[in-house]
Length: 406
Image (cartoon, rainbow, N blue to C red; front, side, top):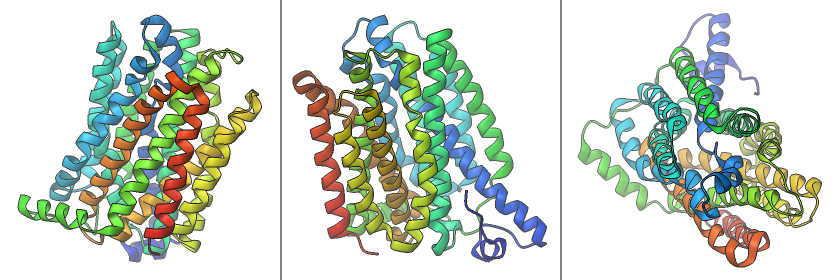
């Protein structure tokens, strides 16, 4: 995480005035809180990805059916995000974020009690209901409380937390499934989520720049305003494509690596997600570039890097597949930082509802990305999935290049 000038952050609203030591401590607390919030959320969201081949065997189900354990929470996020955005614009930021983290812990723990695939899918859907209250509202919090020239790098701190959390959730699940059982993974992750909620409540400062939307009519009007904003619509389209590619890649590559010629088990598949840690290193770099070359250039470059990575996965070598996934992940995380930062700039006001719409379209893309490649898989296997994903990545670069303004 990059260092911030405490005086600048204090003037910008992220920190309350005080002594240099107190301001510096509070600055560190903000960044740590944002990292933990991102980490806690993504411990849970994609946790079943390395378990999909195992579920295919345990539940005697198809690839498309077991992938519903991934698509169910993603769909729930897309459905709940606009409502959560309106709620947060009415009642505030921190209280919604912390309450949503504690709420997420409940179905995370109860997923361990599932006796069959439908029950697991239901608990996974309920996990997704709480997640927008963390993601969308945190994005709005950062956009409001960060100075413009540090918004990209501050957002990157949060995104880095999501990256590390995404890896840890999958890794814990794979290791538990190999040595203990998949149910134990949900118990561990549920307990970690409760701890993350406590840390967010303790470390995250209350908003200082939040402007309350006091009536439903104003909130609905804000939504209409967002849907008439070409810059926001273009950013929503980019978000849809980014998560389509990321979820499609990291869901169906598990079947690719579990089958011949690779034959990887749950533990090995979980280890493959260590490529996310490369993204954790590169995302702060992306934040640095965002603050200097702008969102449009960063987005186009990130899409190109991700497409090159997808082509590398076609080589029948674990080393090449892992290298390709590392590039695909790095490109996706850089794209996420660029799009998330662009939302605050394009919206202007009512940022939480703008972020809520973004999260809805972003995760709708993830839902489609968990289903549509599954249909392609049955016809053309992994090469067909790669071709489909590259088309979406090229579309992302074209939208940013032609429609985004700096």
